[in-house]
Length: 194
Image 1 (cartoon, rainbow, N blue to C red):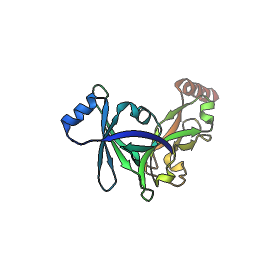
Image 2 (cartoon, helix red, strand yellow):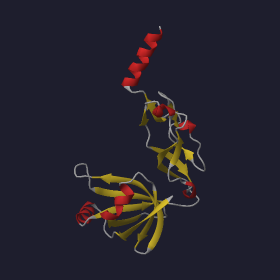
Image 3 (cartoon, helix red, strand yellow):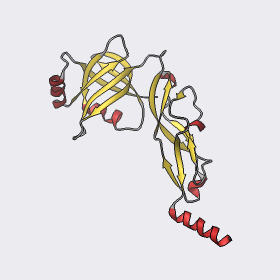
Image 4 (cartoon, helix red, strand yellow):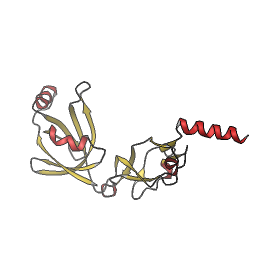
């Protein structure tokens, strides 16, 4: 799993007015859960750009006033109007405890349905997995080399290695749709054979 460092500073005062003052200084209020006690801290908003605006999943090294914590981003909140990052929750990683994470899907192979004129439609961009931190994948490879026109590949066709997939097994991950022009050509072809 890819790693990213975020530097933080402990928060002495908690509350709405204190959080608002931090945001005005381009700081993001954060909380680290999962340890013996919660750690409240703030970090410069600029440090979250790669973590938040990326499809990738990162293991985050939180450097809070010299103390290093290994964590993953659990939740984040944005302002409903101006899209400002308001708050981030982190979960402390324990090598002996499994964690649940949304991992991006990566397609491998060439679909015969796409080669025949179909369009690959992504139904799920991420899959929810449960694993020990050491076994968390960067992405989940989905082989589409058998995907024909009008067919789908479902979650249950993916073989997990060292992790469990929590997403509904019957959910389609990708589908090859038949474009209208190709449908009408097939219909005309069937009429001509009669």
